[in-house]
Length: 423
Ligand code: ADP
Ligand code: CA
Ligand code: CA
Ligand code: CA
Image 1: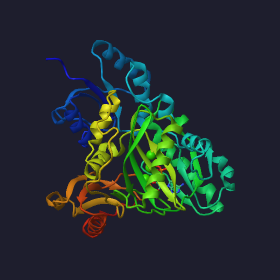
Image 2: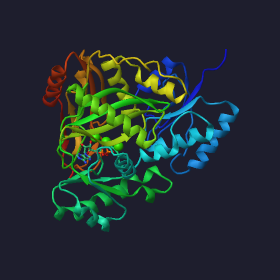
Image 3: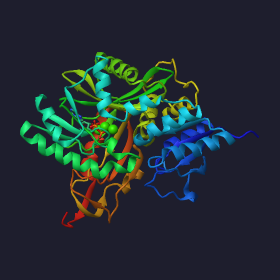
Image 4: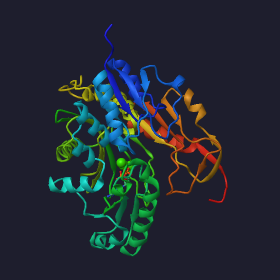
């Protein structure tokens, strides 16, 4: 029996099942490079994982690539993939070194840096708000010429960490200093040279509904699979709240989103990847916020794509990253149903003493996944400090109205109780 092709899967949380399950369907084995913040129990690994291979990819990327190259020479890998944003440049570098399909390193680096994304979009003539890149907090004054309100954000942030709206120039210096201090503490686990990650973007606030888009790029051609509605967050902080898919939009708006997203792939040089793009419809026109050159939400977007279109999105991602043509290529995208994603808000801070309303969701036929991430005993620091989200809930429905009604129901049913610990 010839062995199955092996895919290196970098920093995938083992608690999120979608990429592992897709590997089964595609017929590839997984060599898992575990996250540095996850203790992996070998007995609980998905059966498709044939090996767990810890690598110091952030602190010693050259050593990590040498190790992969040594193994590749002994027994070749078919591809390398990550759904974890900070790992994307390492994965591109490793793919280039090993001769595997994937992104050019430059494209991977662009998609990791909001300054470079903004520059590329502007150079390509795509919709871009006024923006300024800042490499030291004293440079806040450069941003005083922008039209207010503006948004201050880390150039390499994630999960809305540090992203703050500023209404007037008087508040700018204080916010720039605060966000600078925050990202210095939080982002240094992800690089050999954390100082290179340090930097902020200040950009004009894009008023309007937020949209996210899951796409597939194969040999430079882009297919937009799902467009989702992310509500209309107004700040000043931008905690994730969830989404409804597909977004209900006039056809011409959807078409314009598809064109803008495809053009952004070209501007960033993203040719072979799954991508997760966030945009705002500002004055009716799609403006990109950022693009991740990876499957979104640690593979969660697979579930969205499958419910809405029937496309096996995580499997298509694996196909692309192992050099195979996606099965959906060249076919029209069908519309099968509606999907909801709901992120439970912390709704307070302190030590969690009880979480109400989540356990019973496992019995609800509309619910496909209810993943709890914070538990009694865990401490939630006051926002905008980052403590993670308590839970997220994915569900399927027959209409957008039903999805919206279900989310209102969850607003009522889920509650966290806290004990004050003086934070
Ligand atoms: P992150 O990588 O941390 O998710 P984003 O650029 O996606 O950073 O910003 C997080 C959120 O902040 C967005 O989802 C959006 O709601 C809000 N946001 C960011 N930039 C802008 C902007 N220019 N205008 C309006 N809202 C913004
Ligand atoms: Ca991001
Ligand atoms: Ca984002
Ligand atoms: Ca967001």
